[in-house]
Image 1 (spheres, rainbow, N blue to C red):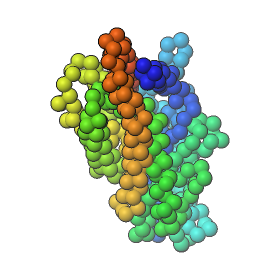
Image 2 (image 1 turned 45 degrees about the vertical axis):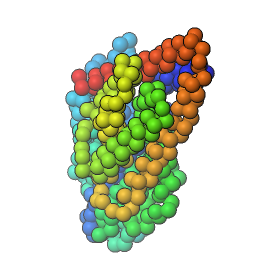
Image 3 (image 1 turned 30 degrees about the horizontal axis):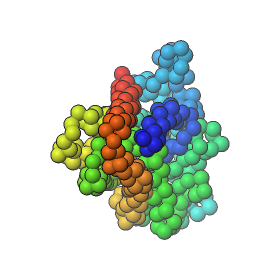
Length: 376
């Protein structure tokens, strides 16, 4: 029963912690740089909610952006587009100031015709054209969403480039804010991408709950191995395809379905004692979760050896945390099931498992409703 209490506490903690993520959390930025000689174009994807808090984008929307009792409301897509149109020059100025390109010791100049729009994924996309008067290797420096801005605690920036015939990608963070094209260090990048993948799963509450729902429905170690393998293969496929831009599904479709997958697996645990259908279901949902993972690692640049290494490293980080969750939770749950020979204790265990499963299903349904409301 102690493990069930821990699981129930975790579910309660997740429910409390989810709203707090809007105030203190990490974010990611994707930068795609392409060019030859003195002309370079950068396309930057940033999270709308973070940019909106920083620049007060929703302030022009009036009562449409205010929920019950004056609390902030989820801003529908059309209102977000209106807000971006009203603040396009301000957004372009902020991103252009924080993303600096240079050749040698001479800075490149950003042109005035920046494009600002809301992408299908829900991110704000800013396209900037730069003119570089000097020659030499191109250096990209990003200070977008610094800690001093006061909106997030940490920012990771994925830079993919195809410049002067050189292709690659790297990950920037608060300790590494710039990269020179052609000077990326694969050995230094791999640990950072592994950490990024691990953090994305560990702090991705929906993915963690999905794993817990699978564990609550598993009866044997074989069940865990099979569903974990199916989930891993599926999300690895769509993670790579989506991160490289070969498959594109809008976030407003993927995110509600990920939430629904949590509720479905949890309810299926209660209603269906047979698990013969579980593998194709888990594989299908794994494809969805892979699309969600790719949201933290959008690689808009060309395919290269370093890009593949980055994707593999990111996926390794995901798998390490997934294995850690399974290794910590399932053995204890299996031990309790085998130890509970007393009918009363066995019934209590069954009720406790059902309660934890219902809590997981409830969390999934709440997230589904919240994310679906974004379509309004």
